[in-house]
Image 1 (spheres, rainbow, N blue to C red):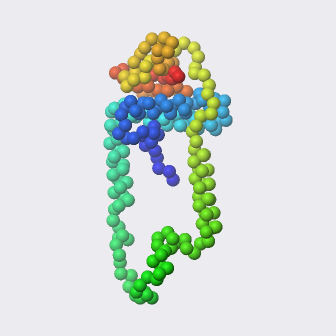
Image 2 (image 1 turned 30 degrees about the horizontal axis):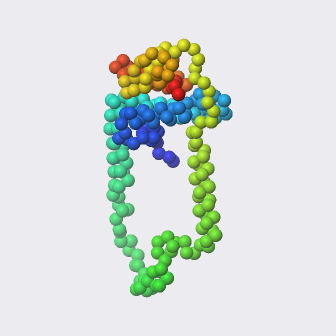
Length: 222
């Protein structure tokens, strides 16, 4: 079973990445996964886009708030330490025991010439014909190709942003600055503002309102 992704894996950044780097990665992936890109696609593709977008938004909400990110990192370190301790803890079966069975004497004190030529992997595959080995490798490659293709999140179709009169326009910085809605003078359009314990609709991207709390629910401007 595939392990749960960390918020950093979801965003495609390292755990030590700076806020500006994380924001850039989030914006790029949000433009790619936004459900508006799939309105004309098959229902299962739209549903998949909504799930991935929700996952991405949750990850961004965690790392965009310094307090939430610090607490998440602390729990992540604890989880990793517990996993390492569990995997390397000694057990009774780890130590050799005398089974009481008399061991047979080796038939020869020295390795044969063939044994010296064939070591490791070569000795294992020696009994198998080359054709069977090649077919096995090809089967493994095909399985990985099919599994990788089933989880594709590449958008195929796009649809225009919501229409109407936006609330405000903003520049996307760590502080989220409000600017006039002049042509080409802003990076995002705010369609809704929600409180600290609320969330934006799935069709809009959330941005933290620094110093105020809550979220701006926006669409990005190309």
